[in-house]
Image (cartoon, rainbow over all chains, first blue to last red; front, side, top):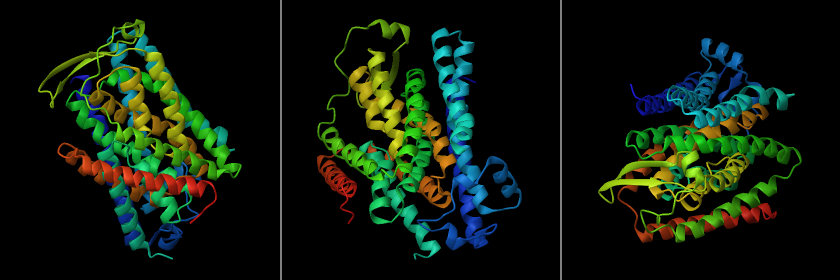
Length: 127
Length: 286
């Protein structure tokens, strides 16, 4: 399979899978009139106190097992954020395979930026 | 207090409308979304920007795949320039957290208003020609392999092109990354400016490549948004789905509508929202 085809599939699959997961989360919230300990009127408000700062990846995974709608939404959002990351990894692999030295270096920096931002920075600013 | 189901309907409707306008104008959904959310729906700026930032990733992934298949996106140029946008989006996301913490939210309204008002000029004088006048290749053309080809449907032929001045493009991309993280928008217009004006890349290639890059930039900036709690899950969920649907329809309409009258309507909306954002920034909070 050629590179551009693979890239197209990653982006499309990422967008569709995350949209579907987010959709499931919304349906669950309405079906159960809430999610976990939160009521629907706490969740569906313009100034809701519920936000991403309370949700870590591990908590989201536990919530998904417990069929909590909010955690399905968060899982969908994580999939959404992970899609460009996967695309950058694919790009890097492509440049390495084609022995394109300058772009291997440039895209490696892009990847490092993303990994730093997604995995290191939250620990630094969250404290 | 608005009932939960009506609130979801409102969020979906507003974001679908914004996604539609964003695709038709080439500004992205966020340009309309954030003003409507903050000015009319009482949504705090961080939540509005957070939901908008998330939605730009969805739109980017969803629509870029179409243009990659058609061979219009120059993936190499895009992912290369992302070295600038990802770096500056990290800086922007740290900066915006400081701005909120210092209670300087009105500054963000002012910047947002200025960005919208600047678009009026861009919309007004939108490039009439399909292809830029040719320029001689420079050292960056060779070093960063700034060339490509695509089939242009409007011209009915294959177009070969090459870009120049990578460094100037990258400098403008640095600004685009900061704006993206500060305001929660894709800042596609700055990205197009970098490629179209600075690097002399054909409009179709720069627009679609910018669209592809927006996802990478926004995903990078979203980490600090997440950690600080600017992403309200319900709002982000409805916004992502709405904008995705709206931009899907808008991208397909775009093939047919490029009429002048429609552009005047866009300019009027931009002017109105831009002035309102500036006024809010100055403390006239009506």
